[in-house]
Image (cartoon, rainbow, N blue to C red; front, side, top):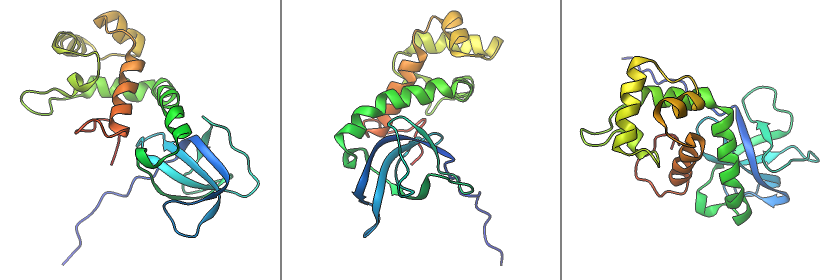
Length: 188
């Protein structure tokens, strides 16, 4: 009898600092204390509690390496956090950091818009992004069939959909704060 093959677990490589306490206590692992950082993973967009290397310094919005090999400032990723359990300053930093992630990872989000499919017979994934109603969705589907979108600018010019970064970020914020039932971007 052989075991089912599970895909390798996906770990975050990078995260962005939302808040840190140089003399903090972990809220996810009992008895762990030190530099406790609240961060958001770049790829899965989950909120994480991270333990920093003693005496290292962190900046809000800073991109830190949390991958498996060669961490320099991070001792360990302690666990996942819920939006309502993070500090109010971490909550207030979240939106600009998310917008930065959506800006920095343009090709990944444009690719999502190029590949997005209907979720049910009545709802298309694109419609769940704020600002995209039936009309924009129809235009987007027609346009991407001719030629995939290459950038946010390309999308804006061909579809007329304004401020894609702002709208995608808004959707991610809804997912992180738990206001949406279905997640397009944030991995549970």
